[in-house]
Figure 1: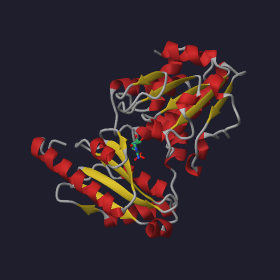
Figure 2 (figure 1 turned 45 degrees about the horizontal axis):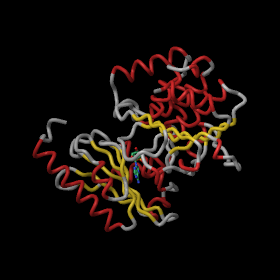
Figure 3 (figure 1 turned 60 degrees about the vertical axis):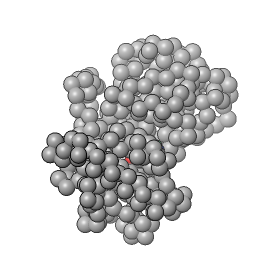
Figure 4 (figure 1 turned 135 degrees about the horizontal axis):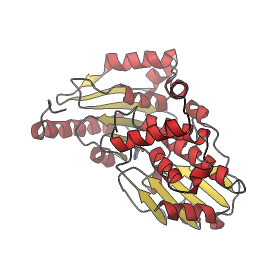
Length: 322
Ligand code: AMP
């Protein structure tokens, strides 16, 4: 499969690399890592990494302004995105050919060539595999692997969500081959402002726990503004609340005033949550999902559904087996 991907990359002079809306380090790291790997091998090609960025991830590199390009003669690569509606800034049918590379569970076919492995920890892990198994490896440099490492570590939540032998072999290989300085890379990924730490404290103090172990907190625009955060970084804090004895599933419900939305970031350490997320204009992985609704009432219905999923899980599997 990677040979087919490489052949298409080789064939096109213009390549556009897109990923999902609501950028995160795996989406942006895979995008910029692949862009750089292609440029190192084919310096004459024009490669664009597109989509809305976030100042939080500026350290990963710069995204490109979308110039007027001849899409009918260009290749589109969509990373880390299972469905059309979540692609940030590209429509696959407008391109001559397109490739999807993704680790989400399959939702729909959107590209002419699709490489999906939902057992992979991250899209960055798939891009590392692509590089190692093709001629991209001959010219890939340390900077390429740094971007991919950051995305991989972030999406596994520092190896909490995924930790198997293949993943550690992959990480061991790039750290050794490219002499990666993990301590330096963690500085960028994990540095927080005092305001963020205080917001974290607010969440811990105000988390509500339902009867069957759903922990959730409602972050209104007023609260988010008080801590000088934005709804994106507030929602991201969902990753900080794993391994709480009384909680099986947890969610950040944050008001996004700018877009008139309520975003819900959900995590689980047992019950499958993506089916509930799908019911509320969302989706994602079995244990890490997200949804978008328009009112707090809808968000509460979602929490109620999560509670039902937990109840069923406790009945079938038990609480202690986690
Ligand atoms: P997040 O909480 O934003 O880190 O997202 C966790 C997972 O859920 C990621 O795989 C996202 O791509 C996915 N996800 C988040 N929000 C949505 C949504 N509104 N629709 C579909 N998938 C989503």
